[in-house]
Image (cartoon, rainbow, N blue to C red; front, side):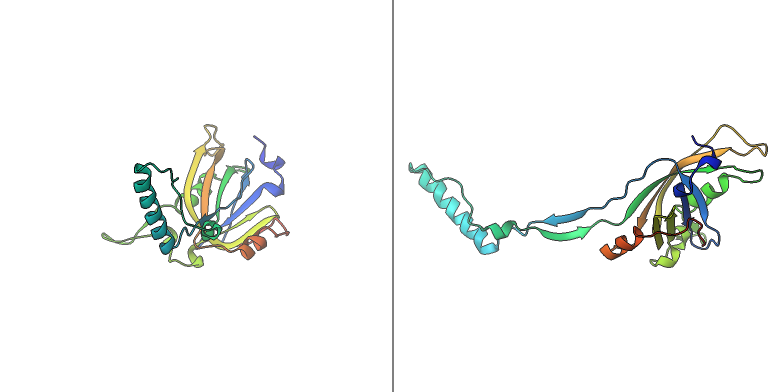
Length: 210
């Protein structure tokens, strides 16, 4: 593992959480993959063509019993195989991160704690619980993301999983020296092509503000 003072700014990750004025700052520990997928389906035969195919094949089955040799066939056209778009996936990322105690008083448990709170509900009273971060179906309760100077998004992400390991080595304060793990994020709604263009066209400073 690299020491913190050896980690380049291009590996810095800044996450803006709802209701937090300060960004969570970490570093990537591995390469990350960014991808997406779209679903397509064939509309298939029109109903009249299906009915005609059924009648044709029933007749062929009867005729073959009488000694003929008709093959099983379908009445269709090439146009019935043309694919139709049905949906595209949400924008999803997995980030392998490390939090390191660089100086006395820096506790790597704090950012991990804040991230974990993003996947657990909030107790309102004896019979009511609220979604993590009091998610209200809008971007105001979502997270923003910046990676180095090459990717920047507004508040579009929900954090869906958090998994960290704490080092057995501790600081002079008695805290873990570092924490390594992965968080998974997905957009709260459908992202469009022009937004992907914008996110991955970012070229700016690595110093971010909430």
